[in-house]
Image 1 (cartoon, helix red, strand yellow):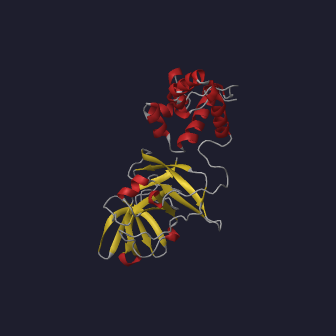
Image 2 (tube, rainbow, N blue to C red):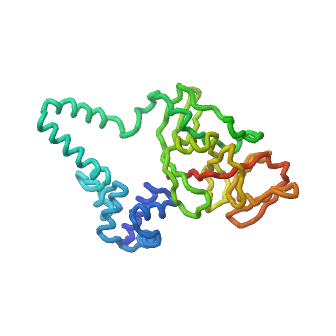
Image 3 (spheres, rainbow, N blue to C red):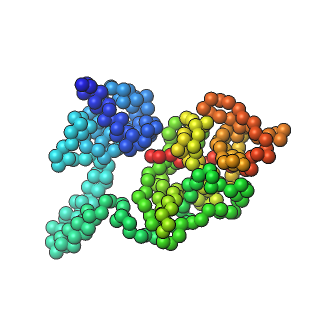
Length: 302
């Protein structure tokens, strides 16, 4: 049987994956206010102090008894920032009900209504109007990209229709594409939407990004040439008015699909590209590269 320290570190890894993802150690450490090297020692079996364990539960909203023992507490008290933030509100509500007991019935009915539906989620299958197209960035596959270069003022994709069903949002992380670590620039949601024909489309909900880049779109990656900078399953966010820059990742549309590489320039009727995974250089005929755009951000699962 594993030692108590090893079991605790296993539960800590589980919390980190659940809340920050497989590559979320730097994010978790930053939220805890400790160096990532110190956090990694705890995942390897070092025992965190009591104050840090409480902080872990504050950040994740998880049960302290489960973290310590692996057993859920009856009437489990979750230590969360939300509980502290709402303490004043709950005190005001209690005082109000003491002063005006007639309000107890309506308040109880409202709380009962909220408890019947998971927080933040519409009932399953309920048709709701989709978010405005002004805040949605489509997430496309390489095969959906046009061969002609998307213009700076052009959108080549369809916005969701008024009868679109909104699925359960998926948390995702936007981060700078030039860092070899998960240092999120923003955290956002991927909204799953399906039309009446059963087709599913994923959109990135990022209103502020669209204000700066109105023609932004995201493209899913399916190779490991840019790992660990960009991993298979990640998506890159580009825009029609953002040309490639030397030394930065770029999305290149080829005749038979699209690839993401480091942009090393163009000359001698060739486009020069670099791979991060093995440091290799690639040179392609300029005629085979239909267009190239600078990678603005990386989109990965939270």
